[in-house]
Length: 214
Image (cartoon, rainbow, N blue to C red; front, side, top):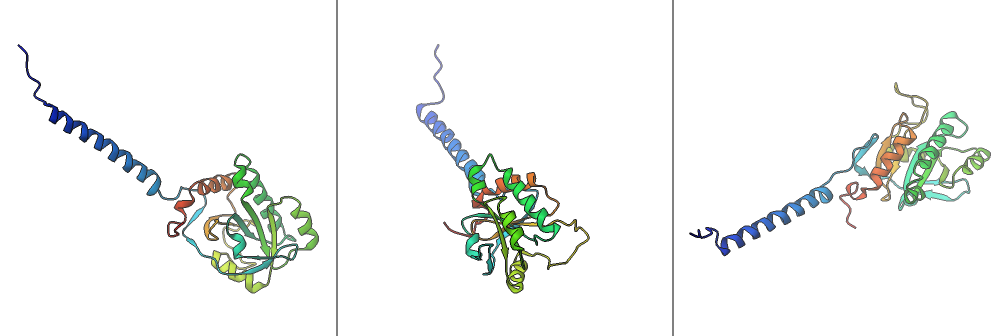
């Protein structure tokens, strides 16, 4: 004797539609969670949230050209404070270039990265020598007031100040393509870790500037 299937065509159609709806809903939610609602990546350095606006300032490079806040836009910039006549300045430049070199497998990001060292003065002869080490390197100088305005905005210690954790190195300030401070790399953070953090942040720029419309 044949037993009639208790699930008629209409019931089966409703079940199929429900299954498709659950699949599409889960797919949409998963993508929203993965892309739209994801926060910034975890880094070894210190993430600045929200990304901090920088004031107008005016410095000069080794060619006497003006360098302002506008020159920080459309690039990633590692910025530190240091005098080339002192070991702190030498170490900062070496560490910056080392971090940049570790981006060799990300040539797009490497080409987009500026390295900037700022001080009241930069010895001309030393500046010329160091500028040959990397085309990305910008050796900046300026009036004390201009530098102090920038230091204050970045949360940097005043010149000559020391802390209990001072190891003679210089912290790096990472400024994003929007011209905002997005991260701080302590003086103890090595070039490899800096390169890894920079890559992670550059791969998720939308999570750094959620308040800015494209």
